[in-house]
Amino acid sequence: MRHGGWARWAPMAVALLAGGCQTIAPERCAGIDWHRQGVEDGRDGFGPSRLERHRDACAAVGVRPDAAAWEAGRIRGLDDYCRLPNALEQALRRHAYEGVCADPRFATLYQAARRYADARQQVADLDGQIDWRERELLTNRKLADDRRAALRAEVRSLQRQRERAIADRVDANAALERTRLQLGV
Image (cartoon, rainbow, N blue to C red; front, side, top):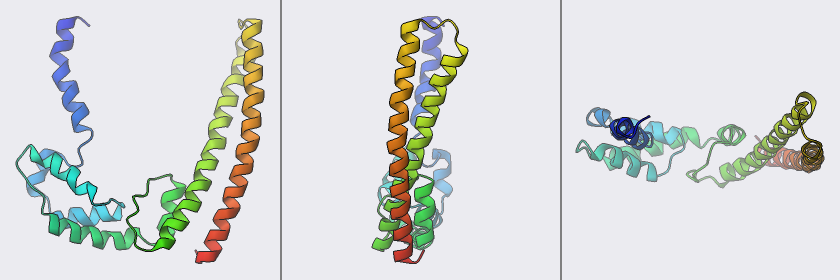
C-alpha cells in the first residue's frame, strides 16, 4: 500500500484498536441500566476496576456511570459468581479470578483447579510442539542433516519436558481432588 493509502486508513485502525478495549460501546452509554450492568459484571466476576473502564468508555459521550447502582448490582451478581462450583468451572476454563469473593474457599478451590488446568494445558502445548517437529521430520525430505538432527534433539528434550508436565498434571489433579473433598464440592 502506498504511503498515502496508509494515511487514509490509519485513523480507522486507531479507532478500532482503541475501541477493542472498551467495555461498553459509547453509543449505548446513555441508555444503560447501571444496576443491571453491575449484576452482569458481578456474575462475570469483575472487580471494582471494571467501573473505571465503563467510565472511560462512556466519557467520550459525556455519560457518567451511576456508581452506587452499579456497585449494588455487582454485589448482587457476585452472589451467583461466588458459588463454589463456579470456582471449579472458571478455573478449568482458565478464566482469570479477580479475588472478588469473600468466601476464602472460592479462592482455595479456584487455585487448585487452575493449577490442574494449567498443567493440563502445558501437556497439550508440549504435545503440539512435539507433533509439529515429528511431522516436519516425516514430511520434509529437503531437511539438511544438521537441521534433522536438531529437530530430533528438540523432540527428545520436549518429550522429557512432557514427562515432567504429566507428573505435574497428576500431582495437580490429586491436589484438586483433595481440595474438592475437603470443601465438599
